[in-house]
Image 1 (spheres, helix red, strand yellow):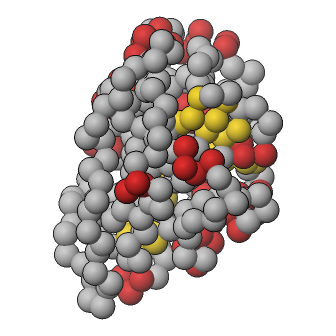
Image 2: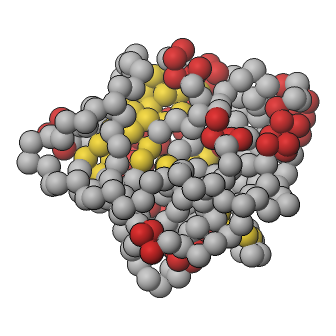
Image 3: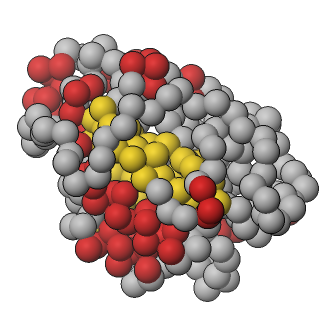
Amino acid sequence: MRRRAAAALGAVLALTTAACSAEVPSTPHPVPASTTTPATSAPAPARVTTAPAGAPAAPAVTWQVGAHPLPLRADGFGEIEPTPPELVNRALPTKDILPPPAGDRYAATISAVPADVLARSTWQPACPVQAGDLRYLTMSFWGFDGRAHTGEMLVNAQGAAGITKVFGQLFAAHFPLEEMRVTSPAELTAPPTGDGNSTSAFVCRPARGQTTWSAHAYGLAVDVNPFCNPYTQGALVLPELASAYLDRANRRPGMVLAGDATVRAFAAIGWSWGGAWTTPKDRMHFTATGH
């Protein structure tokens, strides 16, 4: 979802693995594959366009995500602009990348990361987690279009079983997500458009405005509906077009609010919520490390 300054990312990724480990207080130790959920070898995603029988009609596409780059600020983020009317009450349809769940029932898999998935992710040898310590998840979710979809996610093996449990609870509650997919390397250096809304976990990048690794770089953090749950620090809003969602009293689908079912589900597996922080306030962010 979020865009980083290319220079900051390049400087961090140039570090050796040992040097990266020294910058972060603790590095996850190798973890054996989870035995809680059966592991299957997932195929590379193939775009699916056929809707299941009885599914509601998809809403008209009123906004093309990623089509309008923003002017850059000195810090590499985009200029903060008012939320376009089409996104004030965001409910864009989901583009399927995997077949939807059978019978609209929640389904999840945990597997070692397939080579083709790893190749299209942001992982590389300089990252602070070994590829073997990541897991590839597929999980059902409800879209804003009222349909059940299947998403994908890379997480640390330590949290894989817990994350599938959390998203099972969100599915049962019909909590909507716009998309859930693996972040690609191109997204890290692409011009910011300020309109991303992908729920994701592993991204090999530094923390915002820093040179130390983010919890996402270990696969130990998940961002949920970033546009509906923006990050703020001072005047900075990320995504840059999401200012309409700073009004938390105006409750809309996909928002995470203090004490709600989403916060409770993550708390049950020991993960904390960035929306409870004073500054920055990271409403999209759930983490196993506290950062």
